[in-house]
Length: 140
Image (cartoon, rainbow, N blue to C red; front, side, top):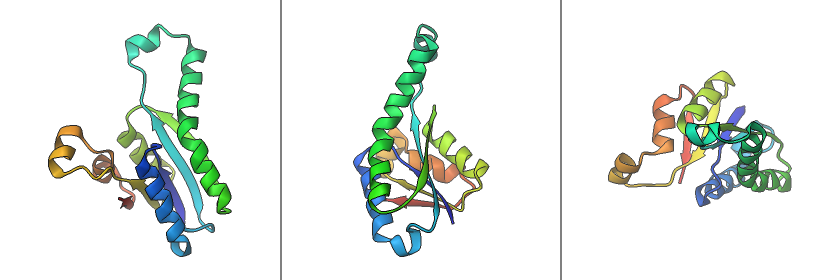
């Protein structure tokens, strides 16, 4: 099975990884994993004032802060995966990556906001569920 794991470096990422570890029989090492994090874009006006290489380095460093612990988690469990990042709005990039990559499943954590909190603050997991054509497993 081809699985896209969306991570943001929060405690909910750790809960998602714990879920994968506990369910290793069905979601363990024999599967093909891609781990994706989406770094929020620097506002266009600020980005235009920055050197391109500096901006690229910033995005890479921010992504590595999230991906490095996940890479270590995978290595400790004998799991392999591809680790990638994109820049922009997380729900759009996750849903687009799931469709373009022809994944069988998307796994991501939910911050567990109440219905009102989700309405006011928005929810990446809710948006991914709404936009994604691939089955999505949301962990809490």
